[in-house]
Length: 441
Image 1: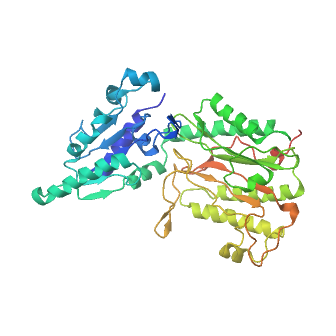
Image 2: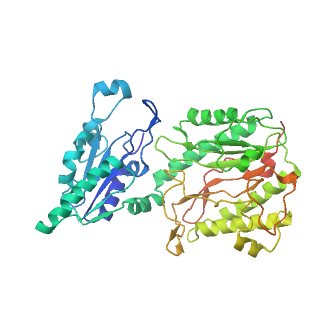
Image 3: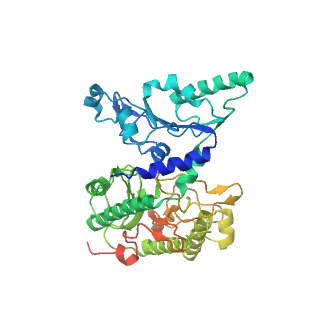
C-alpha cells in the first residue's frame, strides 16, 4: 500500500516554493505502439512525485495564491463503466478527492474551459514547454489572454517558467520512505543477478537469461524491469546499450548483465555485474576485472557529504588509466592521458548517475562552474568499465590492441546512498569479488 501522506507533504513544500505562481503539471498519456494497441502505461515522474495518481491523461494544478481548500486541483479521466469494461478501474473525480487528496477534481474534458479561470490571480505560470503539446496549447492560450488584459487591469501572469528546477531539487534528496523503497528495488535486483550467475551455462542464449531475470522481478513483487535489460555475452558487452539479447553464450567468454527492477511506485534498481560464463576467468579477463573492481571500490569510498560526482568519476578514471598502463594497453603518463582523454577508446562513459524515480534521475550535476556537492539522501550509481574492441579508433601515439584483449567488456555497477556519516551500498547483496565470480560449472 502506497503511503499517500508523503505526497501531501511534497505538495506543501512545492506550493511554498511557487510563491504566487501557478503550476500546471500534466501526467503521461497513453502512447500508441501500433494500430490501436498502446505501450504499457508509465506515469510521468514529476506528476507522480506530487500526486501518487497512476492514471493517464491527468493534469494537476497547484495554485498557492488561492485560499486553502482550492490550491490543489486534479483533472482526471471520468469514471465511466463503458470505458472501464475496456481499460479497467478508474478513480474518477470522487476518487481523486477522497483517495488522492485533491481539493477539487474535474473531468479532463473540462480542462479547456476551466484552466483560464484557475490561472487568474497568478503572477506567473510554471509549465514545461515542449513536452505536452495538447496541454501546452491550452496554457499558452490562457497566458496570452492574461497578457492581453494586463494593459487594462494591471495584473496577470507576466512570466512563463519551467517548474522542473523546483521539483527536481526536491526529488534529488530522497526522503526516508523513498530510501526504503530503493532498498527494496536494489534487494530484488540483486537477487536476480545472483540467480543469473548461478544458472548461466555455456550454450544458453542471452534471451533465456533475460527471461529468468525479469521473471524474478515479477515473482518478487516488482512492476517489471526498470529499463531494457542488457544481457551481453563476449564482444556484445562492448556495446554499451546492447539490448538485442539474442546471442548464444560461448565457453570462455564473459557475460555482462545490466539489469534492475522497477517497483509499483516507480523506484528503481540499477545493477551491473560481469562474470565468466564457464566460471573461470582467463588471465586477461581477470586482469581487467581487477582494475574495474578496484576503480569502483575507490570511487565508492569517495561517496560522502561534501564530495561531488565529478570527483567520484575522476577517481575511477585514474585507477583505470593506471591499470591499463601497467598492462601495456595505454602509453604515456597518467596525467597526460587523463588530460587528453586518450583512454576514451577503452572507457568512454561517466562513472555514474543519479537514481530514483527515473533510472537516470533528475538533478543537476553542476551549478554553473561548480559541481553539485553530495548531500545526505542522494542516491547515485557507481559504474566504471573497460571495453576493448575495434569499434573506436586507437588514438594517435597509443599502442595497437593485441587480439587476446579484444571482445572483453566489463562493467561493475552499484547503487549508493549518501548517508549523514556513512555511505550505504544498496545493492550489496549482488556479489562482485573475484572469488565470487569464479565458480564450478
